Image (cartoon, rainbow, N blue to C red):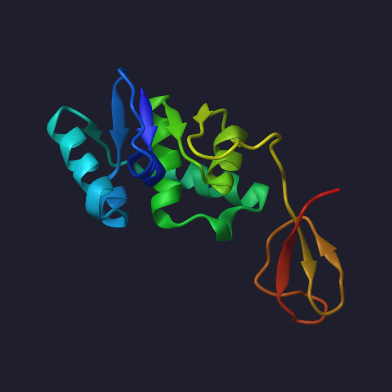
Length: 152
């Protein structure tokens, strides 16, 4: 089963396999892509709402990988749906791909190249430059904001 992100509707993704998505995706679409969503829903696409346990599993993995601030509610619920349904996530979103791969969820990309490796991001303080492995609201040393940094 393919679990479709908004990019699948925007780029007119086609498959003969079963498809699923979540109601929040419809809110991100307009014009022709919204029509595609409605047409696919009318022809049997499964509309799924992931359970809280699957969603929390995704959020935990996103915090561990450093992608938590990059994922919207729609993004995290889509990954949770693919995780829960043992489906293949169809998306061009790199943060979603990273979290999905961390959870062992298959990913298929559409218009862009997919990620080449799964990453656990690091965080660096904008003020003192100290590096942290975990996301924090503020640097515990100087109180400045942290930025996401590619691990070396």
